[in-house]
Image (cartoon, rainbow, N blue to C red; front, side):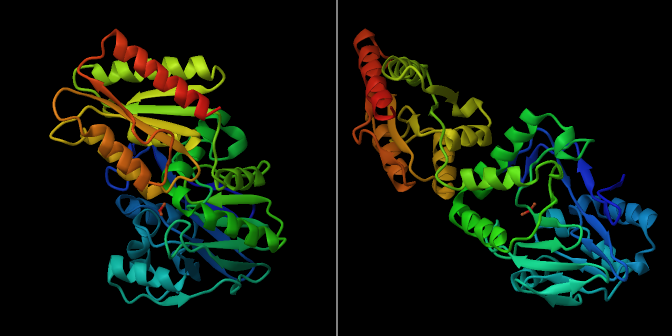
Length: 398
Ligand code: FEO
């Protein structure tokens, strides 16, 4: 499969309908993904921007041969060294050895580290240009968006930004353009992608967007390396990124818990009822973390102004689904979110203290540093206490 992005740019990537986990088992991709590769033909030079994930390398090269005589490819641009975009480089360069590979300095390190090949690397910095004849590619380093080697490039005359992972979505669609797909699906995949991948780099995201918009380049299309191409109102996703990058929150609270014999679940529901009483307008999302997709829960936390985290005590600690959730939250460095803990216990009862410590370590502002300990399965009085705790949380988030 291939399709025309415009007269000079052809999409030559791979739609991966089957993918359900990305980065090993780390990130769920309920709607698959695509690995976008672009063939750009100028009046004098032809360039391939990025390739596809390694399992599709042969298919990629075979498809590319249907578009062009590979010997007519003058340059390859590797905006990012991660395998989902560089995975077909070896296969392609076996066919056209010696073709210059343009990448950032860190990109060369990454590609050498992954493939141990002495390819014809040409490293570029922000502002460097590559002429294709009637138009040129301008490179913009984009460190930590989302890896140190990440880079954007901009095609003059056509006014297309190729930002690699930025502005992408793990979203397989036969349509491949933003104006042709279901807008709710697109939005939910774009925000999930930002929440789970880009959140820790939010300050850099905002700075990079300001830097790129400060160049006053006209952007008629944004062609990311995953998901659909933004051609209708392409800056809408840039504006969303600016919003998401600035301690984004909606009027929402997420309660995430795990439970062994239902005590902590009942506590969670009583807390939710209390929040609702004190703060009727707030959206409350309740998740059993062990039975939910962890990346979907993270997306809801990203959208929340506060979170409430619960686990019963086990072996003087907490259940592993909650430990995993808090480990991810710590890495994502959420900003300006409030939080507190709860959990039931029968014997030693450390879970609330453990969760409270992890929340603090992850940068959450504590609503109540004592948390709520529920003794055994909550009786009427304990339910009333959990309800009051919920009201305290609801008030704190008003
Ligand atoms: Fe889509 Fe950072 O790879």
